[in-house]
Image (cartoon, rainbow, N blue to C red; front, side, top):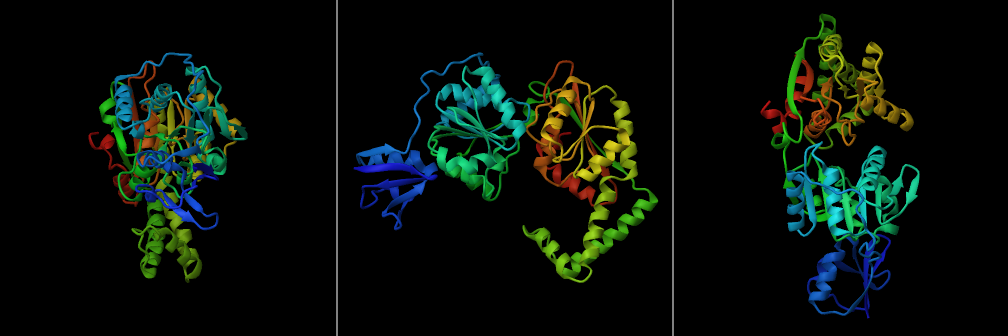
Length: 458
């Protein structure tokens, strides 16, 4: 008898001497065990190929059934854009990627999809904060306990939320227990490690969720292969003023002081001179690695790296920026404000200057929760963060964002805007300030990261 099995994150096909038409795409012969082996994620098309060829087989791969006792605790009432997204995903055979802006209800869309399928579901998230947030939403809407994998928890239930890291460590054991795979913030999925989470799972039904999809390069082919094509893409501009808050984006250029400008241009010259001397091309994917290697091996490398760090710090956290932050905070006194920086040093500098709570990746989990709870309640009207609030955290009360510094990433810039767009009572308009040091590299960085429809009309 031909047998299909799940083995350590792969599919095996035994009891057959030759692959029939269609199956050669999914299996190859494994001489170590004398049967055919393929990717777990190809379970559904492999089964369909066996059925088309009328080959009797025993399915020992799947270890899940339809949820017979699944009950809804709170009725889900979708908004029109969520209903549209669900319909398009269903029309794509319940396999595909949905792009919705931050605050547009991606989690609620996932709840609607879980209710529609009523099959065991595994939700992948990038952070512990999102792990607990998703579990709370699941237990709010469904009369079923939520399993957790990550952050010290390891409870596998028919509906389970896992961090990408924990799923990677466990997928060889649990990859056949779920029919539905949801990847939240799925722009994380194509990384060499995370893509294994999806490849080692047999789930036929798949939903990728993100507010910031890449549309070029290897990312697209990886996502199409592992999660399905983009079946719905709704932009921030389509929902602003209705589902999302109205917003303004204000870019403010500030001048460095005479002393800062002299120091900046000196160290900038040392850094760029070294780069030119070594022939380093930052347009290449390995450009930064080339620079670090040259700094370690070439004469003047240590000084070049030191100058790079200094000129960047001067541009990111000059005195004029700190003075402007004070003016903005006074202008928006009483409004919930998030101050974003590109690095921890700048965040702590601002925190000390204005006596504000600072969230970085060094912040302990309990302290982070306390800071966020106090921010949501209004006890803390302002939070300073480096990057930990870029995505995923639900803070609908925030109406003002101040970007003191950041990378040239369009995704990061859109994520930061998204933090202040969630609708909340008495929230009329959100404002995002982008502070840029004039006559520095920050001007070009700002132009790069503003290449998104959310900024082009503002």
